[in-house]
Length: 190
Image (cartoon, rainbow, N blue to C red; front, side):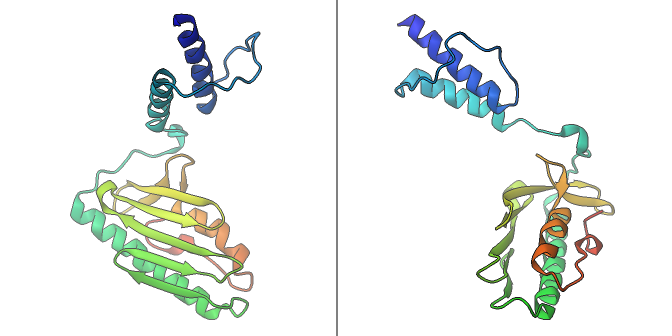
């Protein structure tokens, strides 16, 4: 029984290390093994998941985190979403190649429908976490934290170090081919 639990823990530990990008030494018994879920394996898997969920990748690329109070977060977040809404409206209004576009902003949720072929971007505030969340039909979901000062700050995805505006600048020109796109001129992208 003890040997079985140790074997399970070694397999789960190697899997946990692999998810963190750390390679372990190959073992002689490297064939895939399917094990039934037991309380012991579940506990080890949860422990592994918890240890990797709080881990910050690319920390050398990320500036020091800003500590915004609630009122400042609300102002910065509203300014960011208002500017994005206005800019998306301007872009989609002039985009003759897109059919069925719609930009809507209500209750801290910006929805940009770029038509059936391109999908919908959803950008919304997450007040409890002091974040802005983005759901992109191209790159998937991301959570952005505000870093820097109010005068010179930006919304950063901490896993890659890329800002919200940089991601939009990367993805949207491929959709709006006839438009000149410059998200980097908007507030809080410095």
